Image 1 (cartoon, rainbow, N blue to C red):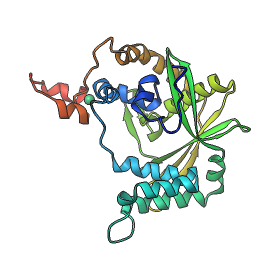
Image 2: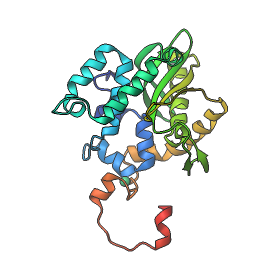
Image 3: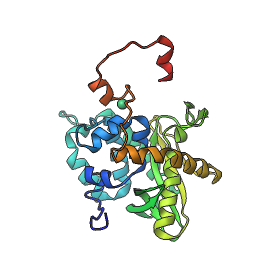
Image 4: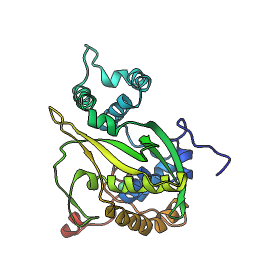
Length: 266
Ligand SMILES: [Zn+2]
C-alpha cells in the first residue's frame, strides 16, 4: 500500500479503486454490489454518460484555464456539432459557468487550491478524496454541484423523508467523509460548502452550508455499511445484484417469477 503513490494521473484507475474506497465507490456499492465488483475486476465498464461529461466540463472551467482548454480539446467531438456551435447541453453548461463567474460570492466560495488529493484510514479501510477547492488559511473547502432545480423534493429511503437534491445524491455524506479524511490527513477541521448551480435558463445558484449535527448521522451510516462492504470488496462474501442497474439488466437470466407487490420494494 505504502509504496504505491496516488496521483492525479492514476486517481481514477482500477488499481487506485481496488486499493482505496471513495465516496463514489461507496455509493456505487450501496446501489449495486455486483456492478461495483464487476467494475473493480475490470469485467464491466459503465458507459460514458453525457450528463457526467457536462459536469466535468463545468468543473474544468473553474479548475484553471489550462484544464478547461485541455478538456475541450480532448472532448471536442462531444461538445461541438460538426456544422459548428455547441450541443445544447454544453450551451446550458456555458450559461451555468457564466452565472457563477458573474457572482463574486460564489467565486469567493470557490477560492483555494484545486483538485487536491488526500487519503486516510477510516471505518476499517483506506479512503481517497479529491477536493474541488480547498482554502487552507480559511480552513474551508467547497464542492461544485450542478442540478436540475435547487428546490425539488425527492423521497429518500435512507432518510425516510422528503429531501433536497443534496441528500438525495448523498452530498451530505460526501462532505462529512471529506471533512473526516481532512481531519485525519491535516489535523484540522475544515468547514464544507456546496456551490450549486442549476440547469434552468437562466440558471439558479446558491452557496450551501451544513448544520454540523448532520454529519454524525452520515458517519454512523458509513460505519454501519462498511463492515459488509469491506468483506464484499475482499471477495469474502458474494456481491448482491440489484437487478435494476445497467450491469444487472445486461447480465440478467430469469429463473423465477416475481409477485406484483415485490416490484416497488426491490
Ligand atoms: Zn445492479
